[in-house]
Length: 117
Length: 114
Image (cartoon, rainbow over all chains, first blue to last red; front, top):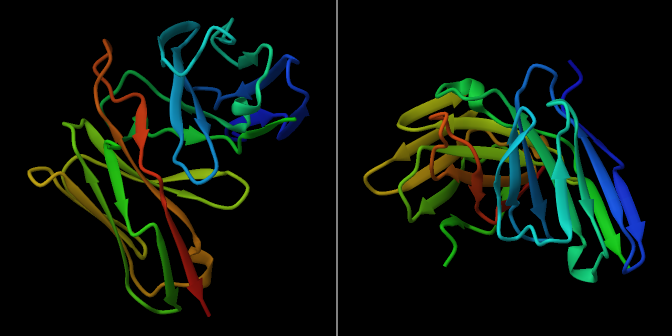
C-alpha cells in the first residue's frame, strides 16, 4: 500500500487555461474527498465520493470545477478557465466508509499546488 | 466566525517543553480530529476522538463535549515536532451513518527550537 497519490505535485498555468489533477486513493478505500487549501488557512471541503457516486459538492465548487471518479478508483478534478483566485493547494484524501469507527480516518495525499499566472 | 477556532496561531518552544494547543468549536460534532501538516503539504491524521482522551507516544488529545473544546498536548517536545497542527471536526453524518467531510481550523504553527 503506497498511500494516497496525487499528480502532478505542482502545476503552473496561465489564466484561462484548463487544468486536471489526479488522485489515486488507498486501494481498499471506497471514500474519496477533495479539499482546497490557501496559504495560511486550513483546508476547505470541496466534494466527496463513495465509490463512483459523487455524494456532496460544496458551494465553493463553482461550475468551472468538475470532479469524477469513473470506476470508483482514481479521481480527477478539473478546473476550466482558471482564474488567479484558483491558486491553492488541492488535497485529496481517502477513507473506508460507511463506518463509525477509526477506519473512517482520512488519509491525505501530498497535494497538488496550483499557481495561476 | 469560523466554526473551528484554534489557539495559539503560532507557538515557539524550546526542546523538552510541554506543549498545549487548543481547539474550540461552535457546532455539534460527530468527531474531532487532530492532524499534522509538514511544509510541502502532507497531512497526517494524529487522532480521531468523540469523547475522553487518547494517547499515542508523546501526544495526548482530550475533548470536552459539553464545553466544545479539545486540547492537543505534546510532552518532551522535540524539533522534529515542528509542524502545523490542525484541528478539524466532522459536523454531520451522511446517509451511511458515518463521519465524512471535515471542517478545519486554520492551524497552529509550532516551532520547537533545539
